Length: 272
Image 1 (cartoon, rainbow, N blue to C red):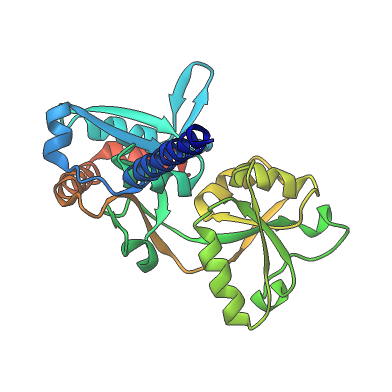
Image 2 (spheres, rainbow, N blue to C red):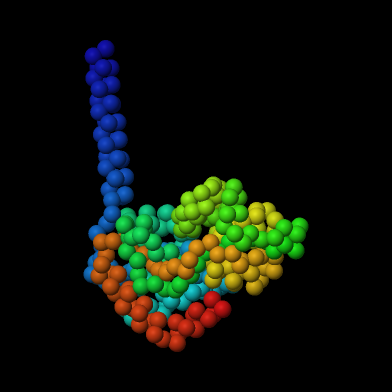
């Protein structure tokens, strides 16, 4: 009897120890790392994450292309550090990876706002952009005219990619009009795929940045993109707040590339 009791106590202690160790490991992995340019330069690799989309980063046949990809290739010429690029469509997971040290740079177009600046640092603006409502033209929507007044978004359902930066703007717009705008986060599709769903009549509304919208509407005649959802804003890339030297280096490279014809050619190629 005593041996069973002793065995139970020992088993309980072992289980408790395992739980504590697992908890410590999880918390350690969640803790922000402290790695800046010198540590990155010493290892020789800058770990970068971007999202898969038809403007910033995509695969065509056997070739990788996209505005962010080409900008990274251009920036690569200013340093001997190797750029290792990973793809992650979830912005939340990208920020989590940045925080834990899996990535050093998020190279996707992120609207620069004060909320995110509390935790992360943003590079020099890559470009200016604004959000637009993506809906169907009247001739492809049973004669129903597109929404032009924000008040008419009351009680409408808008579909956006999960963790989309546009969610904050839509929530603010809901407060501005004093009524509910229903937001559905889609875990599977990105903005361009949701736009195709709008054109097909599977959903009625989504939002995306105007530069992407212009590219899509040139291919999809059903789409109306004339209604602005927000003001013009800056978009940049993100690094950890405790990586100021990396941020300064990136800003120096970005400022240099923005003075070149190569930068203008990239913009023309992807943002006609």
